[in-house]
Image 1 (tube, rainbow, N blue to C red):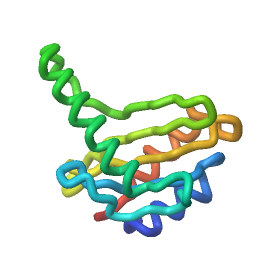
Image 2 (image 1 turned 135 degrees about the vertical axis):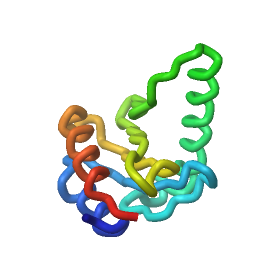
Image 3 (image 1 turned 30 degrees about the vertical axis):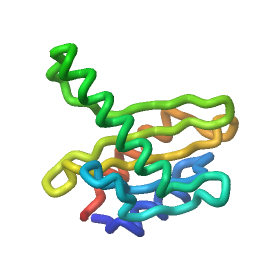
Length: 124
């Protein structure tokens, strides 16, 4: 089991092309921990904004009558991938991991795989 800081450091070292990552509380939009980022990538602002993305997605699924569980959301930009993975398991239901990848240096399939592995080991 990994705590928040350990899990975020694991993301930075094991997911190739990672520019930044955060663990975010879905209810408040607050980042519980961040790693990476920088002046051009404010992870606390991104955490709050992506909370709105998840809320909009949940409303849309409700309007469509979809009852399946949302696993992740991928946002593709010209030079970056932004991946939002909803956490599962007792005590983690209101959390999500947010990952920003350099599109030219990342393997998206491996990043999703690694992020799921790290999330499974996360203890909050």
